[in-house]
Image (cartoon, rainbow, N blue to C red):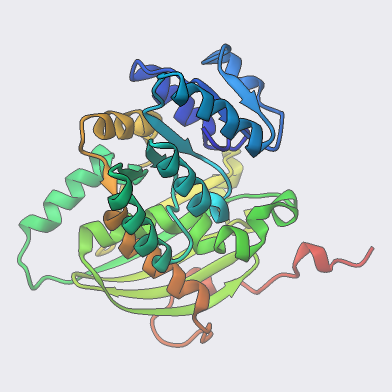
Amino acid sequence: MYGLAGYVAPRHLKAIRDTGNNLVSACDISDSVGIIDQYFPKAAFFTERELFDRHNTLLVGKGIPIDYLTVCSPNYLHDSHVRYGLRLGCNVICEKPLVLNPWNIDTLQQMEKACAHHVYTILQLRLHESVIALYNKIKACPENKVYDVDLTYITSRGNWYYASWKGDDSKSGGLATNIGVHFYDMLLWIFGPLQRSVVHVRSHDRVAGFLELEKARVRYFLSINENHLPKEVKEAGKTTFRSIKVDGEEFEFSEGFTELHTRSYEKILAGEGFTMEDARPSIELVSGIRRAEAIGLRGDYHPMARYPLTTHPFHWNN
């Protein structure tokens, strides 16, 4: 496993254990990885990539197979770490986003074919029961029906975010990629391919825009600013708010997230995992959002895009 100290790593550790598998080695530049004791205390751990590689190579040389490499490292390292897994002779399970740029997928697909191994990515919202129900509902409606959708996702982050790799767009891919790619994937899966994308607002703590999909007009607002949370959410002591409205009706999917990584692993082990090609539309979309010019509050924009912009924390006067 690459990226043992990260936020999402425990979900992968649990999925590996719950599917009856074993973690033999892991690597992270941070040694704050005590959580591994809850799952695989006998796993070898390294803070240096070279030592991790030597250990794994020795295992394979002794005939001890390493079937999968799990990649939970920072976004900008996914491409490199997926390549390593393929060269080692493993199938690879990569956390979202698979890569930052769609052309990285092209090269990885060539390598995947040459190595005769597979790369799978985590698109866990496609396995959520409520999302599947919405997918089936939309598919059953008339083909010419076009829906109006509002996506709102606010997940509070402190000032640490901007000092970490997540606050560096060249490493995280920006806010739309880092916190939104799985929502975009879900919308593309349900409502069809992208026809047009407009970015209204993009700053250090938010991104808002409009997507025209085959079967939906989507206004979206993503934020890591706690001041954007609805009053009732803050009063309840919660730090995250997610809402999807379809033709004005709230789509409820606030529960049912805890086992989605385990279900993802079950699908992968059964040969039914999500491929790099499955991930391509959402990677193309977030890559486009990252490079687009924000046009301001013109056209059909999300109501919360009107929040006044705030100063970047790193611009504060000491």
